[in-house]
Each structure stands twice: as C-alpha cells, then as structure tokens.
Length: 195
Image (spheres, rainbow, N blue to C red):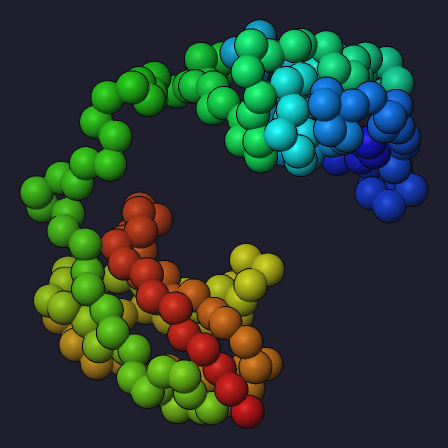
C-alpha cells in the first residue's frame, strides 16, 4: 500500500510504502482494494475476494507508517466481495452560511429551471451548434477530460442556437456546461470530437 503526500510540491517523490500485503488468507488472499472513510475518521479497506476481513488505517492524516495501517483488523460476520459500506459524512466543518446536507437534497427552485441543450452534429470534427431551451442568459464553458476549461462564451438571453467551433480541439470527449451569473450549473451535455 502506497501513500502520497498531496501537499508535496513533487507528488511523485512523496510516495511512501506504508504496508505490504502480509499473505493472509480469509479464506482467499486478503489484499488491498477499495477504501472508504468511516464516521470515526479512520479509513476502511475491503479486499478483492470473497473474504471476511477489513483493513483499517487508524491515522490517515499521518505520514508514512505512522498512519498505522492494520491489516485484517476487523473480522466480519459474513463474507463480503468487492463492496464496502457507505458512511455518511457527519464531520462536516462549520460552513458560512450554515449548510444542512440532510435536507433539500437535489431540489430546484421554481424560478431556476434547468436549461435543456442538444448538440448537433455530435460527434463533430469542427463546427457544431448548441441548441438551448428558453433561458435568461448564461455562460457556456467547454471542459476537457482533465477538467480544464478550453473555451468559454457568454450567451445572451433567449438565444436558442449557439455556434461552437471545436476543430482546434484534440480528438476526445468534452463537456459543455451552462452556468448562471452565480456559477450554478443550469445544464450539461457531452460532445465528442473526431478528426
């Protein structure tokens, strides 16, 4: 198991081995697979096989072996395979303004309807059009697979067809994202560029 120091200026040189699989069978190889932060600020690790154990990182904010990775720390009452429990995040920091993540999840205010958008032709090797439903004005941004903005433009209210030139973009998948003046996402679509 390797650990990276995400605060390091050179991420590649920050790699530290914090544990190596010890060969335990439970009844199959109890290696390292998916991880999930727990409500107790520890990280729980499931194995790739049909096993009865979880590994635990007791101090995930500590560097190197000080993170205290304990292999097969928990014996489960039954076998589990490839799945780890999900834990709600009850350790949210104080937010300003306060945010209650247990209510109003996924709601849309009546005056803020999503904008439907269609892109044609899609895939494209150059010019394409973004067709929008009625709106009050927004911004359009095109993102590459690395999350980098490669193109932006302001869209005037009620403008229904937006020309979009993608000929200079490298072949691949891109996301078109529409946002309002506060940065709220109003609509998204994927576009594929081929050459």
